[in-house]
Amino acid sequence: MANIHDKLFQLLYKVAYRLSLCVWYIFKPSSYGVYISVWHDGKILVIKNSYKTEYTFPSGGIKRGESEKDAAARELLEEVNIQTRPDQLLFVGRFRGNHEFKKDTVTFFEMVCTAPPKIKVDDREVVTAEFLTPTAALGLDLSPFVRAYLREREGQPP
Image 1 (tube, rainbow, N blue to C red):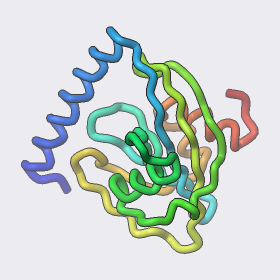
Image 2 (image 1 turned 30 degrees about the horizontal axis):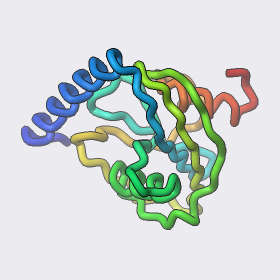
Image 3 (image 1 turned 90 degrees about the horizontal axis):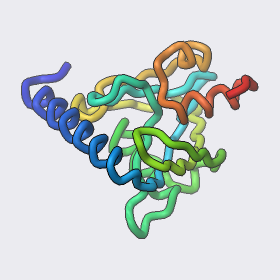
Image 4 (image 1 turned 90 degrees about the vertical axis):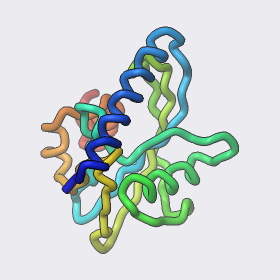
């Protein structure tokens, strides 16, 4: 449960995100990021960021000098406290699109857990994390890249 400090951080994330949208609208930057689908027992880990309306997977940008797999492992740790080695992540594919006024190139990785991972969210950037069936996840308001990935994986048209 979020305390007053967490709520303040959530507000700061929302303001920063909206300011970023304004900048992206003007400059239309290119961005490169990673998404990580974490599977356990046929279910997929879905998270909700405090500053967005859509659900998504653990994801984020690639830092300068960082490999895609290193970025994916870092984002898993930062967002849901799952520690993994980059070599445990399986490359799935790349999606390109225009989302949030950016020219995005995102790389998807999968991680299959034999035991349920101990998920911990910070109640600041990430406020919810849960494992859902792909069908249940597709019933949510998902980020376009996550929806495309799940639909493709489920054999559905985009």
